[in-house]
Image (cartoon, rainbow, N blue to C red; front, side, top):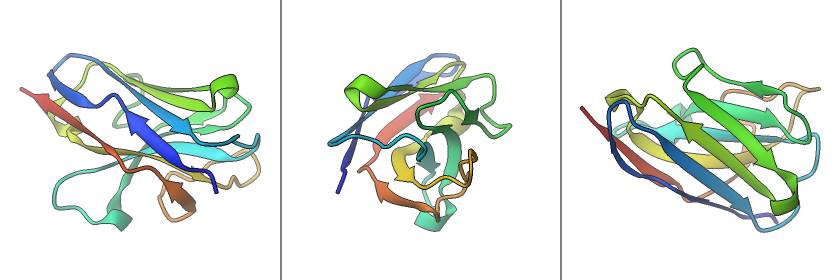
Length: 129
C-alpha cells in the first residue's frame, strides 16, 4: 500500500508563505484524488477541512472559498509528489495539515475526508498575527 509523508510545515507571520510537500512511497495512479486537509486544535478527525485537491494526471483542482486564490495544489508525476503552496497566510490557517489519497467520482474529487483512505502523518503550520 502506498504511504504518504508530508513535509514543509513551520511557523510564519501573517501575510507570509509556506510550501508543503507530500511524497508517495509508490506510484499514484492517474484518475485518483490527492487532497490536502487541515485539522485545527480541538477538532475531530472527521471534521478535517479539505483545503485543496487534484484529480491526478490532470490540472483539475478544487478549493474551498476560504483558501481560493491563496493556496495552490500541484503534482509532479515523475516524483510521486504533490505540493501545496500557501500564500497570504492568516492566523486562522494554523492547523495540522495532512495529505490524503482517495478515489475520484468521475473527474471530481470530494472535499470531505471520508472517501480518502490513505493519510500521511501531518505537518504543523502555525501563523502568528
